[in-house]
Image (cartoon, rainbow, N blue to C red; front, side, top):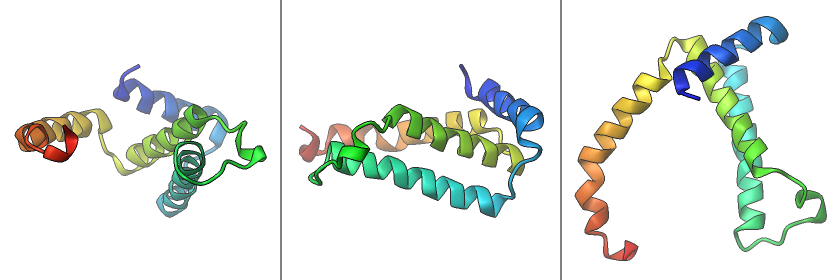
Length: 108
């Protein structure tokens, strides 16, 4: 899967099953909700909080996929080519952070 195809897949799904995109503000609220669900799993499963019995069956991959779906929706409806934007960001981070992380004593 590449990001461009994922954006197309989401758009096709919306057209076939979703009637239309929720507006951008609604999707932003949905994204926040989904990120919160990821945070809950991470905090309880990998952090110091104890995991409730009801949380033990939660699938982190599924919750991360929910985040990705909403991000792809937002990209589609705002005209962002996410694959291009991601590649540009990765290039910028590589230039900016390569030596920085290698020289960070906290990471050794």
